[in-house]
Image 1 (cartoon, rainbow, N blue to C red):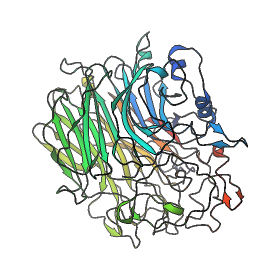
Image 2: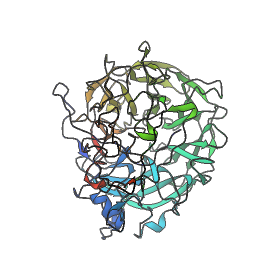
Image 3: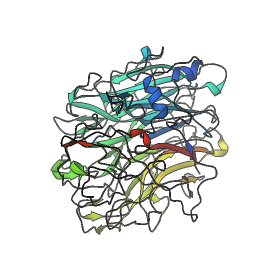
Image 4: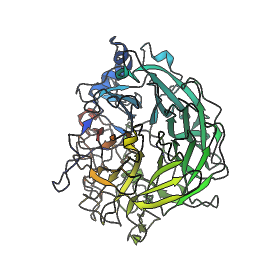
Length: 624
């Protein structure tokens, strides 16, 4: 595992007319450029003014956001809630020379639309370190940072935001590794007020507070709620996550549930059992209200399992689970390289003091950039691994155990030598990635697929998500998918990372694409969602040395209406890194605007972080 808790990338614009996007303009969820800015969750719900230095900074930051989540209200599709890892408050303090310093929190965003995603109001989930609003005392969160947001709705207008969180408010090297759930309900006056009033944050599981991600660290969250009102498990909330045990090795999947609307959760139980290396849990609730947790296994050598999707099933509302069952094996698409660190320049202050990293095993690197993050191939790229996502239509009683799964793996037959240390299967072996769809019956094991949702001769496809929620019988069989797609990458090659050219420069290369099936995934209608192609390889993290795109996109739907969100770099300002006194392989194409001075043998930190070099945003739009 490599965990980076600070920001991500942003992009140039390149939108060939040959690929029109979905109707309507892309919508910005993160208004951190005084457009109009951020508002307190307390003010949004009550109308009573409140602000603080973090919200003031968020309003002007032009900062980083990634790993977006979204949830369409099952009672009213006009109401949509979004979230992300939001770095907008990081530079909320200044030094003696009035230069911004990175002393503020990374936290969960709370983005609210009451017009079906036409516009959003930006805020933060209460409980961040500087929060002094009346809502702050309702939070059990004990950390200085939070991330990995996931969202679920129940049938009564309640919304739940799941998260992992880590940094010690005292500023030590301890990484707490807690997971928690924030609760919102209806503030009164009709369904337009669903998910508007904050009710508190419940600590689900504590980490072991060890330095540098060692000890017990909980991460990679998933959440779902039962909202089909069939009388079995109504409004139960289900939460799952990966538990990393850094000092012993291995990763396990844990699960917990709440039967009182998120006020308390059961003692977490291990559901991955003897499988030793697993991540990326996802939860589905079927038409029978049975609960499934799917996750990915890795061929690590610590166990007999290979690269595959496994699943466990509960028939008692998440109280107990059966043994893991193999769902599907695959050839992975895991970007990797060989670490080749170069001596970093002397610097008086690093700009990302909270950017913890776990050392790569055996010299392997999962993201590459400059200085100590330099890789032997010379490419610059963001991390990505094959992941699975699973969903079910909770209202489909005709197919009560039907599950829909998507995953991004290597397309068989596309393996090829890369001619470098870069690889997507292993170092030196590349391939083309694609989005695979699989329909299964959780009870009988009957299956259809896997099949390709959008088989293309060029372009990589990654970070898929899927949604199916159809209370109307007329919409049964409707499934919506989203993913990132590089078919418009002018330098596309199976031998190189996304957006990398043969000369090691980087270019705009990623779009959000989506697909819709109205016959249970038998056939799909596909279209481009984003209006701009952007560059995911801007070095905006770990002191402006590596790109970071997060680990997922998100889609949510109700009947024929579907809304997707993605990380986007169209607003990023490119600029030279003055520390590269000899320009490196990317030719400044991956560098972002920054302001540094050289004095007394060392470089300063970036004194202009608000001028656009970190301007990574979350955008959304209706999907097919």
